Length: 465
Image 1 (tube, rainbow, N blue to C red):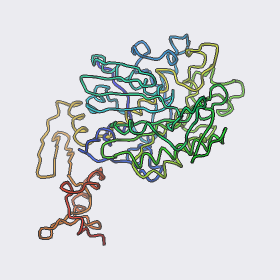
Image 2: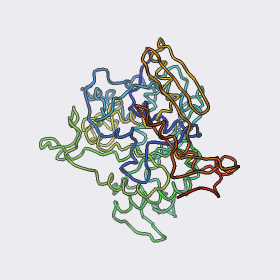
Image 3: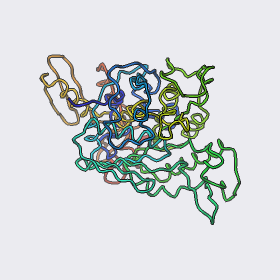
Image 4: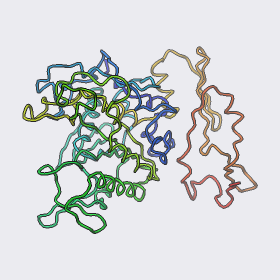
């Protein structure tokens, strides 16, 4: 029996965030100007507001199912005695989560190149996602190559690559003689990044490192070199440099950009009201409920502040709160370092389950995919399909249900005046038709940037008021 991957409801109603990089369907569901709306949503449902619930059907894979799992994340192999931490599923407050297979993920992203850019937390989530895909589609042959800080997992039959580039700060570290300089206003890797169809960024963990763990000697901004500076200020400055790179270099019609959010540690048990523990060691269950007693993470606040200034679409995988609730999900003394150290930063695999939501965010369905899912799930249900001009009507008579698609790229009207096609920004003549339906799902964006022969109206005669 094919193993399914639990992905969020984004896979059912708005399942095309990632699937439509080439332009069949417009980007939708996220207002990139407002950081609170930058989070991947389904209508009013925030996928990242919810709680962890116990589910006996979990985990969706085991460490033995994934031949390329990293040693530091393989907690069971290093003697962790409990397994209950693997049996929690994220449940959004206002959504029911369907299960979509890894094979569906591969099919929908056929021919795409996906790149994770970040630190070891990116490695953690990249590996969780790829392990789930491999478990769900074990017959899909893969090639895994690691060259320096670049890991490349390819599924040749689907012409898809899921890659990881280790880059802890996103901005550059340059070598000047024997000095390593962190340059807060330079991103030389950008020309490589921009060639991908999907980008998933992450940075935070390394910004607080000092001493021998600090991988730079000086920090530079606007030509001025400092021995050190306020780390939160440096973090925000680097994020603003990255934001400017997105706006200046990313072609949003070809590339989807995600930011993974801030992954917290659990070194301070006072944050979750535990006076007896020293850190995450010995924790065997989540913080129950939907709120973390320790409050918002300071880096999360900075990240959302910076996302407000990004003009182009950047979709936030707002994993911070749901990760804060998983004090039980870390390797602790069952990572690669064993009892020589306590890892309360990374995550056991399988365990925390953020990649299920990542898969959801990488889909948001167009009507075609939704109807295909329904037909696959209920093949005995007879249907009638009619297409008239820009209107497609799929009916299931036995259920008295119609699922329709009306092609309307701008929502507002284009009218013909002689030989002139006029885009009328304050007119919606289709509204009387729309209002007769029980459920309406709107989308518009992709065609607004078209020019020349692809532009379906005469720009000189656009009516604004």
